[in-house]
Image 1: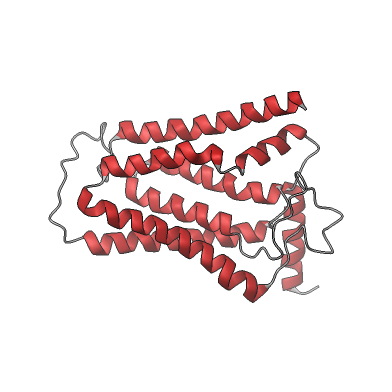
Image 2: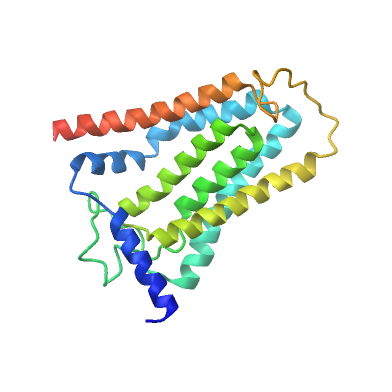
Length: 235
């Protein structure tokens, strides 16, 4: 067995260790987690976080960079890497079909390298980390990004390797977006009095707004867990 074959086999074994379960509850959690609707409140509070803490002069630039991060991560995955490498998803791989668990029959598209969900999630997480510069906030958004990525392996539509490369790509593109922000605004004459470190983060974001974002984030986690429990009891 060559080194490359060994890596591929390790990736398959790692994927099988994360994929699926015999629990309808966790299947329900995974299903709700991937729902767009459940994350709308967090998206709204994220936009409000930016509006309330970034000066109008910089806000449009930041919103454009957020959109750019999403577009770049998505297109790099779907338009470049997937057609170039043509690595089948676990749910499409003939060697994995009989071993992969799916949820509600969802199998995704044909190719899965690398994961666009992982790239999007980590791209946004890293960009916001650089913008806000708060330790607890950073931990929270990394947890969100990691769960958002690994849930794709649980569903069987991505290998762990797809997730890791996607996360790396997202981190790089999110950092690139912030670097653009820093280069464009470094000579701005916009200054903000940050006041006490108890009230503001290192970049001047109000901690009360950051706390509200984290409350909505973990509140959404709770809604998903409770919703999956209710769904299982009904079924």
